[in-house]
Image 1 (cartoon, rainbow, N blue to C red):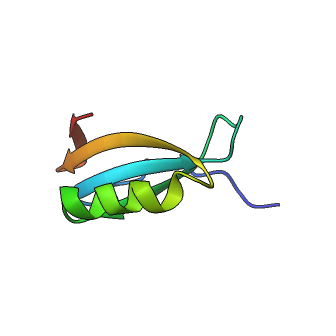
Image 2: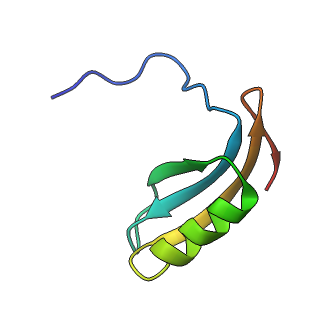
Length: 65
């Protein structure tokens, strides 16, 4: 069993989506550099996962969602 994370995760600048299995509360975050790339990723994963758009991140904070 692994130890839990003790510090916050610093997100890179860019755009994020969160992929969740159907019915689950937590998922994984996917990062892309541009808004066009994130739109293509949403189309790619929407058939297999619940896709939630997180927004654009700058300096570790979500600017728009």
